[in-house]
Length: 206
Image 1 (cartoon, rainbow, N blue to C red):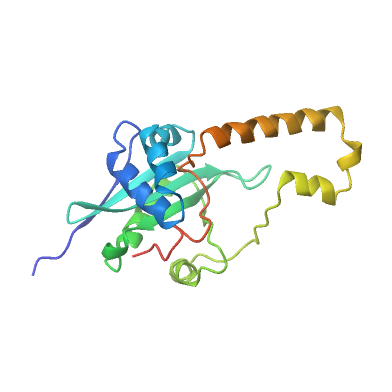
Image 2 (cartoon, rainbow, N blue to C red):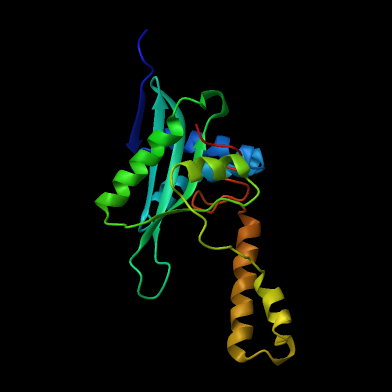
């Protein structure tokens, strides 16, 4: 019996069709509404994201059918540290998991990291997503930090500086409100973001 073939290729901004469709599957699985996901796809947000410095995406095919994708970004973790490669999204279609597609995608990520001289590869995985954490642990990923997030307004209140806002803070707040209003007018999410409920927001590996 012939062995099933998995192939992985890097996506260029001019050819994002398969990536866009896979991203929509991942977005819907993660709770994004169909309307918002469709608006992002139709608006060219995927191609726009791939043009950002340090961003790259890979699509895997299984027997010539698009089956999964990975999105990575180069980031500096400190003032003097060399840039590292961060896996922001990894997703495999549920019906095509358990065929090694996730491993093939990570192999492409590792090759890209070596080509771009990144010494380390990071992955953002929520602590509660046990299947994905086990998947990465088996591949040598270890836990290094606890990531905590706070709304800017809450941070100001906790610091007790709400009543003593400087001119710079007030200007910054106006910018934040303006940006928030812009997102409300076009709430389509970006392709490049840290997973909220796991890599692809489900056991997305395979």
